[in-house]
Length: 261
Image (cartoon, rainbow, N blue to C red; front, side, top):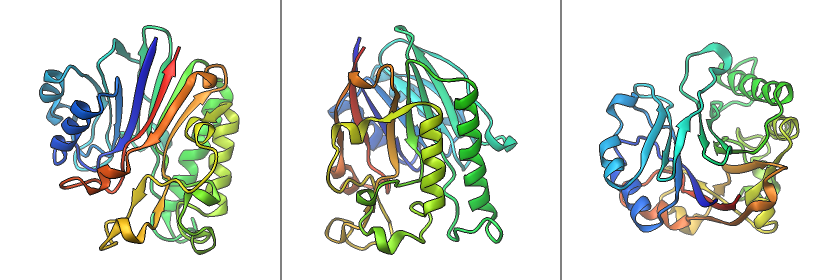
């Protein structure tokens, strides 16, 4: 089975339904994983996506979080986990006919201050990552692809300035270390960087920047990983930078990879 997969923090699937449809129509990924849908499942535009040939597997939440998997190839709901016992819609999984499991994650952003003693949100982020690590260590994943807004830019060339962002949430050493532990626990391979090993890569540009394109102060917060047993099948990774300039854009853009399994 050959398929192309994309991941995109859409920042409200109902508000940005039109650009999701644009992506599905113009780029035609076989699977699109969305994060920060900000909608209960029953209010997500499932009929509009179905008209384009995509089924919906989702976990929703009014006004916050929310994750969805749109697929035009056969896929069944493979459940979800409630991390940190908060009831947040931050994970959903789907299983393909070839036995591959797709995990879609929305890791907490972590607030503005990288200190769990004064910032509860940062502590939540670290605890969430620790639970991910422990889950993958206890139940070693196989034939799996993990995607999503992991809210961490791990490499020096995943941010516009390593030096200036070392104390900024999403690139601090403690976050990078926690993400590395998650990756090692599940024997995950970063497919994007396996395909594009060198150079600056970003998938997010702040809304606060008046001219995001010229300033280009981006971060690679969105990821596609695969377990080592299938990682060699991943290819053709790319980031759709132009989507940041679409009408009513998300501050994130889609990240793509193809797999031959």
